Length: 487
Image 1: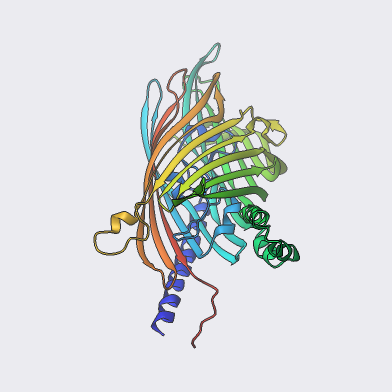
Image 2 (image 1 turned 180 degrees about the vertical axis):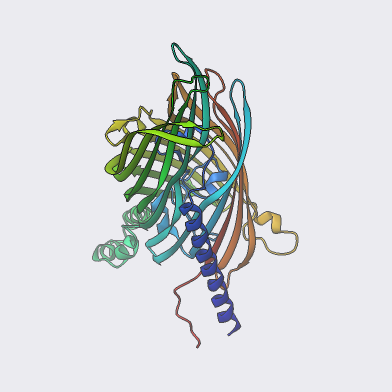
């Protein structure tokens, strides 16, 4: 009876944890205050949020080939929906991001701190070959305030001020399946197996059985997402020394709401012996691929342009309306993207993984207008080590900690003043176990990841960003959907 009460209590904690996180995230995203505070977020749809959760973040952002093994703690990998098929326990994840960014140009410096929701997700096994997940994660964020002074012939000095806020959010429902699950069992029940067994053709029997076991590890997945949100961009032209010119302001609000799909595949191959010699720890080779087709996302835009002047008290007084258009429908053309991942896992202790991904941002268009973005490319590499995840007894806690590290490099979608911006970062992280119960099948983990990196450059009139990013995530595993044996 106490066991049943403990299980119910833990499920209640997970449920409350998820509901509170949902309410918090809806409030945060609806107020449009979650931004990266980067001047480069004024282009395209803003700064793109990385895929994957705290585990992959601490491993350089790798996620394409990462999948759950047969032992907990289990995690959710939204970067590749095929990974859901390996979820064996109901898993809830909640994460928070903390950023400190130092902005530097040739003549100014500024430091900005902010925090935002990183992810909120729940996954569960439907059966042995099918897993599902749903949640809310940021897709992109906009947050900047930039000024630029220029001297123009026959006009004089002009101050250009650019401001923006908002972002795009993503509610997703994903499924991952193993389409060939159960093939070995079907073969063992087949007439062909009985015939080969009767002929004592063990070599051919084992060959067929191993091939079917290999096919059984293939996973396919799909995320069906609804993208929603808005971003506000404002440009001001201010003439501080001219008494004959009125200042000008143009503000646009872009609102999007549409469905978006991304796909994934994973395959693993286990090596348990070499030349007939059995290995002490099995080696698993991991392969992954992700893909999203070019998609037109429905959007609406409001735009207002007018001239104005400031009175003696500093208040803005409108003069003439130049343009006022409201609720104009159009589309944003999201780019084709694909990625590949490789991984190697040795027993339950070592995991090494790498990713390569490309997004075709040169095709991006907003309301049939090209934004002159560039194709982006990202490479990442990460590693994870846990001395002994099953260690028990006093003094063995540090053996159960997951130690992670990684690095990444990318060519971004921005090319400004003939310079394509690059970004790189190195990361470290820990996965800290918080209680576990193998009998009740519930496990918890606190994931901490820290990344130090840089984007852009301070030369050629651009801005260099040096950042420290931290993610704190909470992972809870529990066995749900089991009929109680006692009332």
